[in-house]
Length: 543
Image 1 (spheres, rainbow, N blue to C red):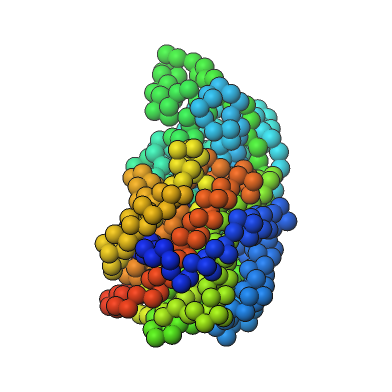
Image 2: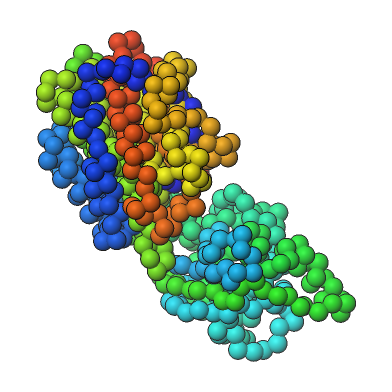
């Protein structure tokens, strides 16, 4: 799951008919089937299924082979693939993190610097460096810092600080610098408006060059090119060091003092009224850096689509999505993504098999159903973005998107949520679907349907998964999930931790709900499907 509001469209529970004709087929969805899919997709051999890499390709092949083995319609696409190409500048490998040495047991065991990695030319470094704090660095004497990770404060603006870093690097041979920014936030550098030299505490710096290295579409690449040109002018080839922007949150793991306290201390040090006696909370920085000069590269990938044609209303379609990609191997060990999102992908596969089995025995839905295992979600919802812009059916005929993302664990990993699933919906018929959901909730003792994962998580989920691309077009959406947990985006999100009874019940519930909605007699199409020509705030963050 890419992190972003779970939109309340409560479709997801039109399951009022306990003796539905589809029920015998739904009963074929078993824990064993889901477990097989999840263990396969989240195996170490798939190396975290990062978009464009071999593990993602293996996962796509596994899904397409499954669709083929159950005779699903491929919509005229070879191997069920909807291929698309993403672009990126040189695929740099950068993992820079440090461990919590136990000074603060409430903190996470590992902290990764991920707010901004700046301006390094071609460079490779695999080492563990000791931290050294130097204030602003102007009083630093010449010494060998080649085995140090240098921590220093931002002074006035980034341009001035960077010039100081170049001088320090020349005098000390230091190769890694962490600049402590008093304020970092959600902000994107605009090369047409913003002067890179003037970046300072009043202009938060977030992921200035991270996004350049991210996978995106060719049509979004022009703005990245402008950034590359500016950065290349700013950073010279001889600048053989790596610079990182650290946030106030990072500082909490490094110092007992806040960045504001450090700034006050430096003023006293400059006046000779205090000494720089700072105790760091951690010892060393683990660096795995391989940076290439800026070079544009292709990264082909694919969505995997299957189709069940409807009957009376076959021109209308319900699209059921789950992203099957994950984040790969950001550190020494792969993040296999069992919950995120092998669980949702497994559910889509099983629902496709179940409804195809029913169709083969003469029980077909009125509306058509598209099952889409999408790629590139972790890179900015790329697969779903491509789908809605190149839909295999007219976009105006998509009645609903049902998106499953992380359906196998408990919210916060807490036992009290052992039977809780969240259903967030938005769009046409929202209230009607909500009432149906509540009725089904009472009839199912094994699940508790909720639309209250917490305010922040609800806001986050509204744009953090593939349903956002559909909702952006004003297509009604329904999102099924079970909440975040401490293992999210870590190597600890493994298949053995999945709550298989719960995931099975969620898959059954969702399958029967999709069936009931697909067979509603009244018109459920949204009349005002949008074709946005301008990006909104969320689009600009992701693209």
